[in-house]
Length: 452
Ligand code: SF4
Image 1: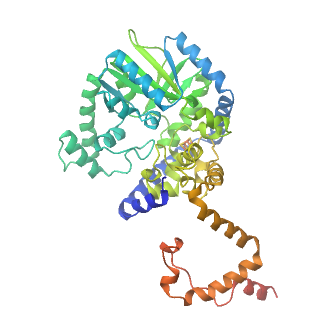
Image 2 (image 1 turned 90 degrees about the horizontal axis):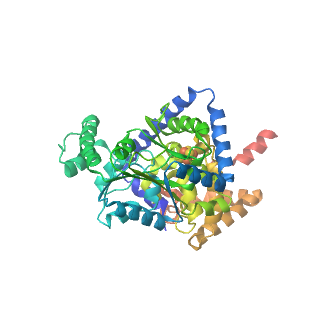
Image 3 (image 1 turned 135 degrees about the vertical axis):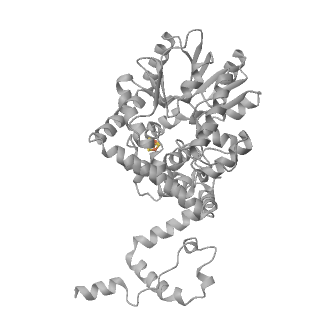
């Protein structure tokens, strides 16, 4: 069972790292704010994006079948995978049939979710992540900690060490420009040698039967340019009705993710290249269950990462503390909805401040979703103690007279007790806080006197 509070405490052991992690993400949030303010129609775009997503998810079966038919008419091959295992098997089979030994892969949270890399590597297939941040964490033997900025938890000096160890660069060279150049020449060779390319999918266009992939580095385009086999992996929720709606999503996605007006490369794949194959694997892996359970809001996510950048808990606890592929507010809601037992602590890793709701480009009411997940996750047996505590708190809060009397007694008693009786392992709040000295006269007494 993931213990977010314990993982966050481990992250905070290094206050310097916690500080710059917080600042780096807040900087991205501010860039997003500036980009958004430049668009007077921003709220209308959000409203439109939400409406289109809701409509598409309500008619998901229709749009998926429409996409499949139109894609097949465009000579794309379409495969359906019920779960992660099936996705892995389909991709491995396609690669083996093609005789592929070296694969370049652009960023795809879905393939992370399905554990594709280790599976393919077990067949002796070399998989190279080509997004710079993902390549850094891959070389480090680490995991991404953010869906848009996978290596945000690493400082440039740490990247210099990783590159020196893995690519033979100068360990003292931590200039981002030079590090990027080193990564570029290393990856260029991988692109030239690749037998096949794997990509994610940002949007699948039902009407046109094509897919759209957004990257800032052009790595999906470079990866798919040479090999004859392109495998695109998409979650069922990626479909949108047609190219007419695409502009709304590309506008809100880029601004929310990095504060850019447009993602550097928005590439459309409508048919295979001459002599090549373009295979689209559509993956369910629990998505239709979420839909059936009325959690369709969570499937509206376009993976921009804005809710992470703004979340005070994420910024101060790091992506790895969530133990999930997608961290932060949306990751906590999704994980809680999928496996209440394993991820019971995640919906509680939230202050319910609602900042994520305000930035989400598709207007997911994240803090309400998290609150709902809390109500479900609190029922796991491990939270028996927490449940009892909350019941006691409810009793305490329901009766003001009882609350006043008890607080009065505690206020006069606690300061007189030995410190170790108050600040001990049972007092979690007291780990980070010092109790204020109670006032000599209570607020309600002062209020009464003042009123008289
Ligand atoms: S929930 Fe909203 S803000 Fe968070 S990643 Fe998804 S689309 Fe972006």
